[in-house]
Length: 65
Image (cartoon, rainbow, N blue to C red):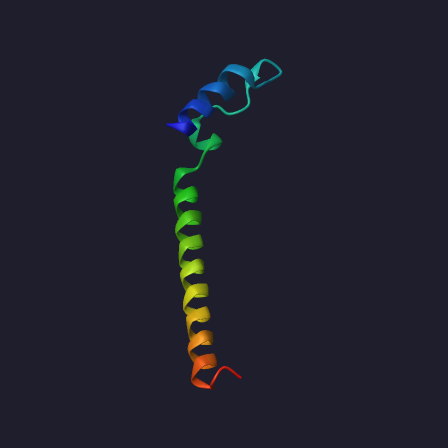
């Protein structure tokens, strides 16, 4: 809903030589690209978490030295 409101505001305010800058909503906001970006960030964070857990386990196994 936020993106739809932003689209409506953009259509009401943004023009270039009297014509709208974005003629279609998908030019303004690419939903599929946003989903892909969001899921990639989650997987990267999970990978970082796993790497940190391995580091801590190895550190503790060596007696903390």
